[in-house]
Amino acid sequence: MASKKKILVIGGGFSGIGSIKSLKEEGYDPICYEKTSHFGGTWYYREETPMGIPSIMPTTVINHSKEMGALTNFIPNKNFPNYMRHHELLQLLTDVAEEFDCLTHRLQ
Image 1: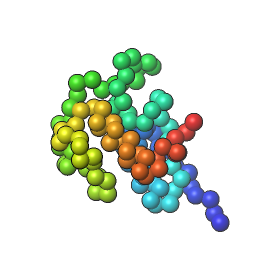
Image 2: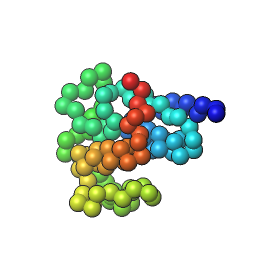
Image 3: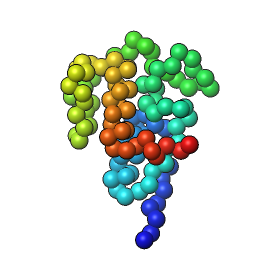
Image 4: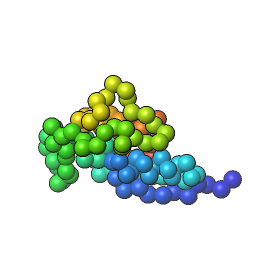
C-alpha cells in the first residue's frame, strides 16, 4: 500500500482549514504550518500581537451574512446571528475544523 502524498498548508485560518479539508477529500495527507498556537488566523483575537502577528479588533462584525459565507456541506450554528462577531466566526471555524478532522493535521 502506497503512503499518501504529504502536502504543506501554510496557515490555519479560513483558507488553511478549507485547504486541509479539500486535500483530505482528495486523498492527500495535509500538514498545516500555523505560526501561532491556535487555528483561526486573524479571527483569533489577541490583545498582544507577538512577532507582528495580526489580530482582529474585538468589536469586528463580518460584513456578509452567515448564509452567504456558508460552506456547502456545513451549516453554521442556528443560534449565531446573521452577521457574526469575531468570536462567533472563530467558533464556526473551530466547528468546521473539528467536524472535518483538520486539527490533527497541524505541524507540532
